[in-house]
Length: 178
Length: 132
Image (tube, rainbow over all chains, first blue to last red; front, side, top):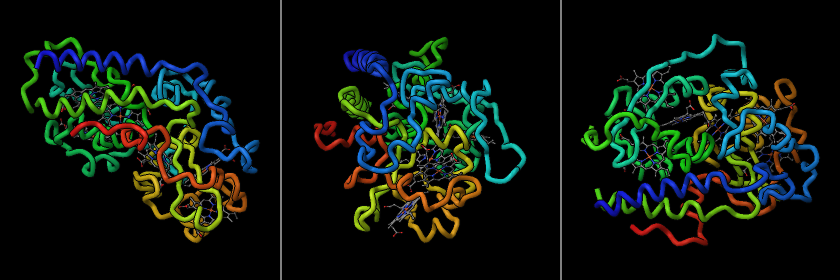
């Protein structure tokens, strides 16, 4: 058991290290492995580096800190096709404590409702009541719960400590199941 | 607890090893349910490009895109009728459908996928699977 817990820490460190690997973060479309370099779209499509290098930087995923990019006004993405009243912002934060030896998870509603509507998450992905959704890391890594978006479009799962970010509560005491 | 933990460790240990030499942008979705068969290059949908302009909700709530690469069964009829990509790529909000090669830009034969996703990395066929 103790050995396992040490391995968790080791893995967490490993992942933190791997997320900063790589030199130039943005690959040119022609040699990104997906685009057909012979296709006529190349040369017309925008290069990721051109658009993303002017936004607040981050260490993984698109190498853009999307929360800051939005809040600090670098981008002003529209929330609907027609002019509609701005979406509801919820500022509740939820602390999830079933995290083994890792810091607790802080789920911020604000950062999410700035991008997403309530109906995207409630009640398809998560119950509207703290502690009732059986979230766990195994399911997340398989693309469920938080892993629907984190690991595909929002910052990736290798960024353990952006979710496991609450350290100031004694960890040992709080391992009790919800 | 320990079986569960072992699975997580197994899965996580695999993650760092997967960076190929050339990697397309995180969140690029390849859609290829029909394209290859129809003799068109598969479609690449770039999330990074669209999220600069639209919040997730615009597409995933209002336009009803399901969270699943290839899961919306998009085809050209629907697009021309103003559904899915066609809600914007209609010559008003964005350039219209005649720009075939802007959307159909992937290497022929590229399967439907979310590029660089954790699930894709975990299931990468060339690598051993995490032990059960």
